[in-house]
Image (cartoon, rainbow, N blue to C red; front, side):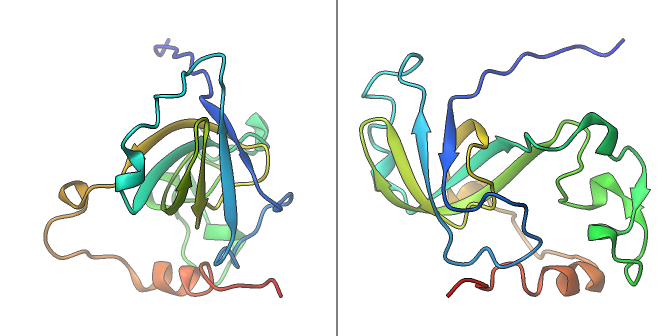
Length: 160
């Protein structure tokens, strides 16, 4: 039996996106409200000195029965190759954990405002980390053509 881990959300996402989007995330601004019963007003001290944050969150609306543990066509697109779930960044992951690097817009006493967080309203946030260049990939990045095609519209705007 695998080790079990209990994770308590540190806060929740607040934004206008209530249904999953496969693309069109550009310009989405979100507020992450921290759980003030867990954190004091000093927990975000110094974060405002960073331009970006990495947000770790849980895909809370994915049912256990929808989780993929093998291969699938990314976004169900049969024109793309079947690849293993760990060769994708989709929401149907075994532990339903998402990670996104976002622009940090503002820091308050018990919240942050970000742009580019591809998470729905009310999404539980598991962690926030400052993004540091030293943790970015070193050297050349390689990825297959299908992934560039899949992501071509992800950061475009579909909202007026």
